[in-house]
Image (cartoon, rainbow, N blue to C red; front, side, top):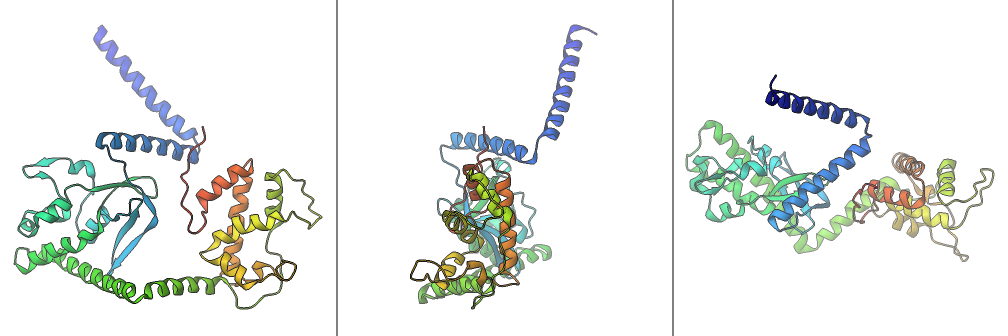
Length: 354
């Protein structure tokens, strides 16, 4: 074996050793540590993207969901810059397209410039795609979804225009029988979009939108809360209070029911304000204080047996688990904000510890 072959052999062995070492290291890491490493790698990629483009990559807010348009569902989100986006892969699926939604594939150039999304790029559609629509789709919207992944989206306002391209192509006889099926889907999407849109417009014009939101909130409250006070029963486990005492470095006496008054405030914060929207405000309204500033009965006495109490017990179990996993109160509150944020509170990013 000459020197060149020996060098190649050594590099191959080194690569093999690194590969095996990497696998062994990955297997030894906890799930949380692997997730933290993945997040750090993703953040480095996002940083490179931002440096190359000179524009910060937007992030999805907590307002994410699915549009149900005549039975076809399209994932959507509101970004932190206020843009409403539809997930491109989800759009492609709704239009029966294979579309990968991959930004890097779209970086390839054809004679006319950047390739449009697969669900609008077919040659038989181009006579019906306006220059305005082409411009809107020229650059996809790259954003970080709620799971921390780089995602491709399109501005939600282009959905009717995309559907119109397919519908027009069918009307002009430009589609074969198989392609016409996608046009039918586009028609159903357009119909669903129009229905949802007109309802939203009427609600906004008449002021019913606010009433609608209150009705939805009332439905939640009705599921969780009773109209009357139920008999008292022990609902908070001793372990919940034991962990609060431990994190605050207080002496815990299991035989005593005396507890610092601040525990009531803490319970409102870690339990009732995180159970469901509007619950804590409603509990305060339904349990007025007496002349001495004390409430006549406990909040949990208003909870329903079928939904309210099971949800309360589930939440208490999760909160207690987080407390057990925390070495001090600061760490517990950080984990709590990530795992169970208050309703209306911005989601906190899980920044790994050094």
